[in-house]
Picture (spheres, rainbow, N blue to C red):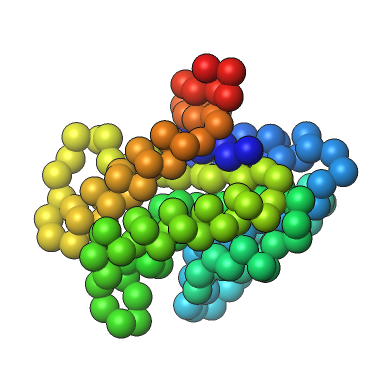
Length: 176
């Protein structure tokens, strides 16, 4: 099962996603942290977040350099935090800027491989492309790429939920 959870910054989407996974009894719960750890400030932030999640039964896998399905136990439940960071990591890499089409293809392929291995995939993504603001250059290209990924993932997801001010609004369920 794949669930896409969207929301703006500080909307409560991550808490909602964690709660969804916490309710799954008997499954290993894995937190796929997609942010890159590039400085001391980020290292401290990661430590704080890992400590907060540890009491919730999550194991953390740092995926700032990419998601590999084999890093996750078969039959587990995986929370991907976040599609926003994952897209940025894939688009803006050490080799330069990758074209959006390549980024979309790579992420969808890795999600497909993960979905074949694990029981649940919950993807958290920031709703940054619907604010009506036009950006310039690479920022606009990144926003469009994230929007394209979000649409494609929403099409194939079993559930799509948006969290607004801590309240979840489900637009699609597997029963829809």
